[in-house]
Structure formats: C-alpha cells, structure tokens
Length: 137
Image (cartoon, rainbow, N blue to C red):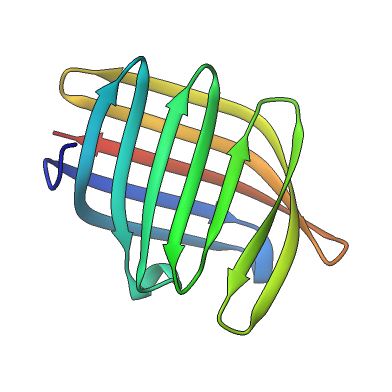
C-alpha cells in the first residue's frame, strides 16, 4: 500500500447550507490493485471533519468512500441508483439516502481525477453535490 506518494486535491461543491465550495490540498496515498484504484488521505479542519481518515475505492464502475474517525460513514456510489448509509457523528447518527447521477474517472501513470455527481437526502431535504478528487503522483 502506497503512503504519502501523492498530492491530493479535493473539491467539494454543495448547495447545502446556502451553497458552499470547499477545497483541500493534502498529501496522501494512491495505488492500484486487482483492477481497483485506491486513494487515501486525512481530512483537515477546513473540510469540517477533522480527525478523519478517508479511503476511496473505485472499481467496476462504482465508488466506495469510507470515512473513519470522529465522523464515520461508508458511502456507495452507483450510477443511476440510490443507496443508503448512516453518518456516525459525535453528536448522533443521521440516516442518508445517496443518489449517484454520474461518475467520471480518468487516470494514467501520473495520477488523474475522479469526479462524483450526486444528491443527498437527509431529514427530508435534498442537496446537490459534486466531489472531485485529483491525484498527482
């Protein structure tokens, strides 16, 4: 498993809470194994979820984002499908429905980019999101 072999730029756009765009540049890991791509990094306070480690696995046209730490979740992105997960937070758990609109992925020997377009439904409210993860080895 590769560790600290990549510069990772995460851009999260959301219309939640009046619209927000957050960007984080950090050092993390990237590797490929058995046809799957793995991206790992630690979230920072700027992203609102400090003390969390994130692992993104892309394989077979799907993406799984696993978050461990103070904020825990396992989100499964499947184009054209709704999936459910629980956000485990220090102040309680929130059930969430995730609907994946589109996944774009382009990688080569220097890194690449993974972009997710999706909606989240929490407490009856629906929020539009896009998440872009750029990896530079």
